[in-house]
Amino acid sequence: MTSSRSFVTRSPATGAPITRRGLVRCTAGAGIAIAAGSSFPYFGSAQRMDPYSYITAMEATTDLGQRPGQSADETGPTDADGRSWDAYIQLPIKEGQDFSYTCEFDSAWIILMAYGHEMTLDEQLGYVGHDLSIEPYYEQNASGYVIYGGDIAEMYSGDYVENLLARARTTAVRKVFDAVSLPVTETPDRASTETALRRGQPVFFKSTVDLLDWDPTVWVTPDGDEFPVVLTNDHALVVMGFNDEDVIVRDPLGPTSTNTTRPWQYRVSWDRYLDVIAAQGSDAIAVGPANQDGDGTGGANDLP
Image (cartoon, rainbow, N blue to C red; front, side, top):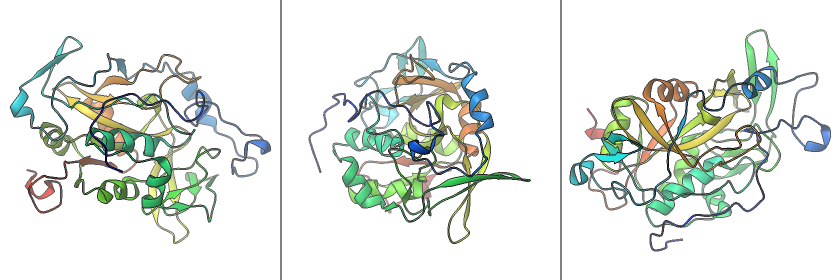
């Protein structure tokens, strides 16, 4: 599963994805587990939002700035998009997701490849675990929306081809980084995110598509554990740089019916980024190089 570091693009295993980030397939033939009589009221309004309400397209680069794991102190500020960036990490481009709902694994692939490790979707699932014991479905009650599914803190839950509710948290996805000895640090706020990026560590985070608005929702596991999530437009992305105003995001999704010009790289304000990750419990992790000195926490104990 280890290869020489090569920043080549990778095409999706299927055609242009129609995803939870795209069309909601609410027919019985679509195979989506949906509560009887339910609908996705916010989804329709989300699609009427300008997909560029919060993101600004950038030219996607693979060889500008810091190498993965290299300190920004060694390169100095990087100029891109007419701006100066305090940190700017070289990351490969993945041109499209493997399947409709595999964004967690597609974004993990970007980080793995940046550090020289190639891992297929099946290999990643082998480490993360794939819980199909309960196909996620949702209900609306007096308090709002609730999704019932597997333990997304431990495994990926749901059918990644058909079920737009399928997903995993970073605590499950980090198993692929653990498997190749890439240390992981939680980055729930701006200070820890900046520290990681300055060290050359990309940040994997749970997001919304195009960082658009969301319906606050609670995910409930079979054991009764609860996690804050979003309804219909869940996504996973990678932060690769920052300056005082914005963070830079690498996105494997690409063009879909809801954003036919979606770029592989864009910038978004710090305020919006922090609001979006807060919607899912500030679920974000930095991934460091395997040869990093320290105690195996990815530098967590060194953060201010």
